[in-house]
Length: 469
Image (cartoon, rainbow, N blue to C red; front, side, top):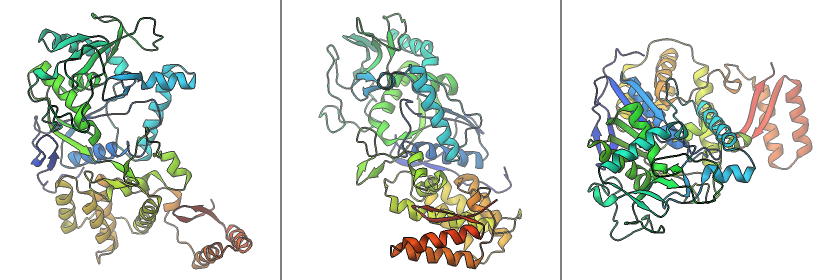
């Protein structure tokens, strides 16, 4: 990394304070970063994946600024119940395993591998990232419950051990909760013996005679850990009792992250996390994209319609991470065309090592201001259409891409190949023929394009033309 350029102070919007704060690490030159990972019972949808784009841009920005990063992304393979705000219902992993008539490990292995594949496709950095699994850290979770128990914060209800939220005065701070009014998003008491509706499970007892697929012995009886417990136990194991940054989707604020913070700070008597960063939802027709609503798409769904994963990354970076995005294929199509154009034009520029100081300073200032990737992309286009020397354009844009991560200069569609005007004309004529429904003429034009040594693929983002190898 080039550290010759002075680095601007970094400012992040901290959910805890609801304000932008200058970032100061706990340890000079080192940063601990925890990102809530997936529950591996199904494929991650593109709304879920926005959280990992956020953590990736954050990591890249910190590395750009010269910090050494220790990053943890957990894998939830037990404990996340269908009623994830009420600690009720069947475990999502077990539910998926029964529905597919498979072993739990088959389900978790399949979807963990799919998640890692998504990270690769989205150009998300994972070098040296720790991916701990909840099932591999049962002893640590039991020890955390013991610590809370010795401090008088745990009580037993009919179905398990619960954390008494009334004993943690700061419980409502992160989520700005109004528990007395039980407003939208508040939890409802459904378990016999719960003292407050907001109290959450630390350990669930295996029901007598139940055919549980995952359960463990504990000092309180056979059962399994509560969903929130794993993130506290694993983050503190790998990052320490008090660390710098925690990221996730905004849906985690009122329950999951609030509970993490409560049990962690009560166990250690120290602050848990200094900066909480949350990304906004991806919506479809104004509604949150979610598996429960059935209005979601995976990266594979997008690829099946001709949209590369990096084009989706470009689409996301066009908005600030705290801004909701309403997903449409029309909007993704426009972003894909822009992404292809950027890559094709950059690939046509000569290589060099000299960047433009003015644009570098502007880009750095934009990213340092709470990860403003939308401004960063706008600056990239300014560079591309500026009067700078072509080699300086390329060097500057490729430097931007150390954070943006959108360039794919080696892929076939982006190869530095000049398409003859005659072939472009054939493609245009075919689009006109297709537009008027003259399929016979369109087929003849495709055959001619093929004869001339080019493969034509129709995608939702328009015709994709590549030379035959």
